[in-house]
Image (cartoon, rainbow, N blue to C red; front, side):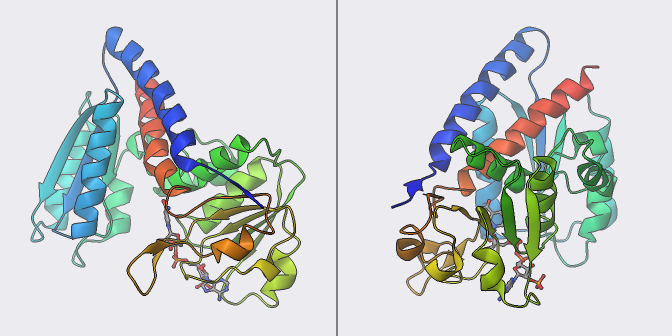
Length: 282
Ligand code: NAP
C-alpha cells in the first residue's frame, strides 16, 4: 500500500521557513511584498485571491489586492502593472487568470517586470527555465519537485513520465525534472500506447484533468505517483486523475486530492516572492 505524500505537511514546513526569513528581512528593512490583481468577478478566482492574501499575512508579507471591474481595459491594467513594476515595496505581481476576453493575457504577463513575475509565466522566465538559469520557478511544478524530494526519492537517473504538456504544468514540469537529472518522457492526447510508457515510470506525474484517467494497470509497482488533476466527480467532490484506491495499491508513494499538490502551489508563490525580494535588495 502506497504511503501518502502529505502536501499540507510539506507546505506547512516550507511556510514556516519562509515566515522566519520574512521576519528577518522585515527586521533589517522591509518584508517581501506581493500585489495580486483580479479583473472581473469569477467566484473561483475570488477564492484564490483571498487565499493568496491570507497566505501572505500568515508569513508576514506585505500585500496589496486590486479588485478591478470586468470593464477594465487592457490599457488600464497595463498602466497599473507599470506602476507596480516601479513600486519599491512590491516584489511580486500576479494577475489572476482567467482575465476577461477583451484582455490579452500573454501581453499582460509580458508587461510584468520579469524579476517580479512570481508565477514565472513571462517569456523571459520561461526561457530561463529552459536554460536552467532561473531564480523564479513555476509554482505547481516546483511544488511537485519538493513533494517528490520529501519522499527521499532521488530523481537523478529515474524514468520520469509526465502526462500533459500544458504551459503551466506539463512543459515546465518536464524541464524541472530534467534539471534534476531525471530521464523525462512527456505524453499527451496524441501519444500512442500511453500505458506502455507510463508503466515504465519510476516517477509518474499525471496532469490531464480527467477523473478516473489513471488506473493501476498504467502504473509500475513501486512508482512515485503525483496526481495534479483537480476534477469534480458526479457529486461535486474534488478528485484527481487517479483511481486512488487501486493506484495506491501499486505505487510506493502517492499524492491525495485534495491535500497533495494543491497546498504546495501557493507555498511556492510565497517562496518566489521571497526570492524576488532578495533579487531586489541587490
Ligand atoms: P490542460 O491545459 O487542459 O492540459 C491537459 C493535458 O492533458 C494536455 O496536454 C492534453 O494533451 C493531455 N491529455 C488530455 N487527454 C489525454 C489523454 N487521453 N491521454 C494523454 N494526455 C491527455 O490542463 P492543465 O492546465 O495542465 O491542468 C491539468 C490538471 O491539473 C487540471 O485538472 C487542473 O485543474 C490541474 N491543476 C492543478 C493545480 C494545483 O495546484 N493542484 C495547478 C494547475 C493545474 P494535448 O496537449 O494533446 O491536448
